[in-house]
Length: 287
Image 1: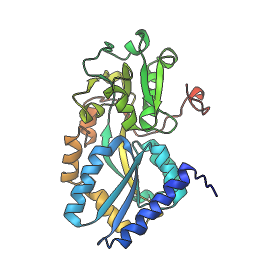
Image 2 (image 1 turned 30 degrees about the vertical axis):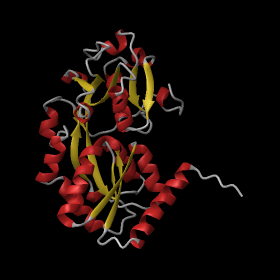
Image 3 (image 1 turned 30 degrees about the horizontal axis):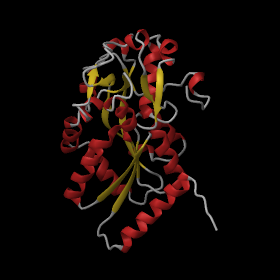
């Protein structure tokens, strides 16, 4: 007899198998499961290792687009915390009762920027170049990836959305996949987070946006899941992310660890708040 499993069902089964095999292998100490947007991936992974060394508490991190991870957390009803790449998705998690609101904390800040393959072969120097050049642009899928949502907002707020839409060649499934578009020279530029250039500095160059081109800065929030039985331990981990050691790790990876550091790039930009996608991006069809 043949069985066909949907990817979402397989994900839930994998989580369950991991928890069971971890217990069978005699692993000592508690294990926390985190569902995270990949905007914070390298820093969060290093923080998890440092936290385990310090406390003995293991932290398993699962990464993808923030919207994708929110859906998986909700469906599986397993997981101790949620760390999306922007407050937009945390707001959805609060609304749907997936996180405990009073446990929410800001971990680090993200600044929009243009990222290009090393050497900038497409000669993209400023935001209007994305409309004026015969270039191909990559963004994150704005319906599921925080960085894609902010990319569309930047274009719309600067009156460039209609002109640039026709040049969007790829909508990636996560922040990591979006950054890879530039690192692997698959497009002339991406609209992403400035920190992408710190992830692969030999492959990605940063083209800074003018401060007036940035309508909103993002931050990475963290909160305890309503499905968790380990609230106290999760709060210890979130506290570690905000500790001097945690902030140092985020800073070393190129994140702005404080609001003051983020505002150096855009003093008058909003932080937090919500942005609704234009109708053209909410139909469910890729552009």
